Image (cartoon, rainbow over all chains, first blue to last red; front, side, top):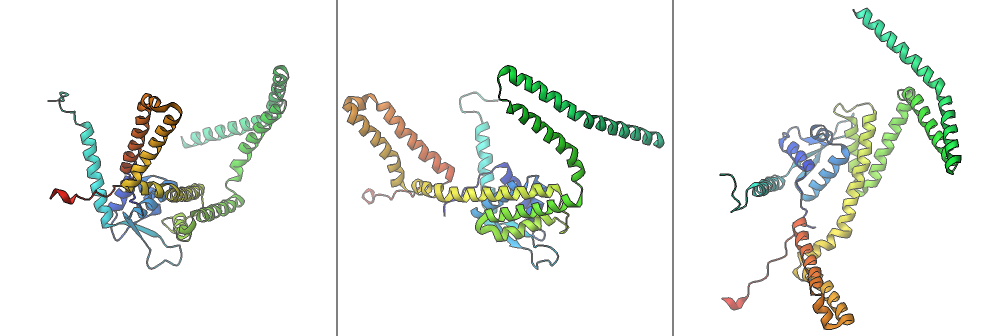
Length: 110
Length: 226
């Protein structure tokens, strides 16, 4: 298995933010992710697939399954996912800060 | 005040109805004029005469669709057709999704059932079903790209030897080709181009490693330095 690199696109960050903020007793599922992020199904499900492949999120089915409707598939962030997301966010902000910082000797703002 | 408002609405509605009636009465005449104009232009400019029929026919189809679609949308027939098409779209998406299909079928059906679990099938649901097809295609394309393209590329990026060969072989081949046809002088003259090829391939490896987050193993420390 190759080292799957998760690129912090706007979609991925929005999905991860919703997953991070979801309580464990009421985890996020496909429809809620679509509603809370504002993206369509054609965007959310491939993003979830990518995150699952990278091991950042895990899934589990509604238990016990309801009788009157299909069971929902819930998604949660794994501990690895939380660590890597935090690290990626740190790296992202550092990179942005280094771009915004004036180069030495160019006479930036005093 | 409310009566006046109601009367205004009634007048507006009657005007709309009248306008629509005139519009539908005028449509055949508009089509006739359009056909005659286009036919004259086709003869004058030497265009294909079928263009006239195609344009007028297309216009007529649009007019008829605009006329009937609003009446057809809310009927039980269209609602059942919508339900069948949404189910077919989910089935198509499941078929396209491959081995993930069975799990996704349940997940997507739960999605379409909504928060209540018993949402009626509406046009937004049809759009979501189209999204399932798109996501199935995207997942399969990503799988195919992973298997056919990224697996060998990652193998090259991870190995120092393969990365070196990836840079050296084309560069040496270009050098050999120039040497064969132009001799040593040709190689010296084309040194810039040869180094550009090597540099470009080296940059490809560096960018690829960054892009794929791949690092080759560190070289072993030499024992003689102790």
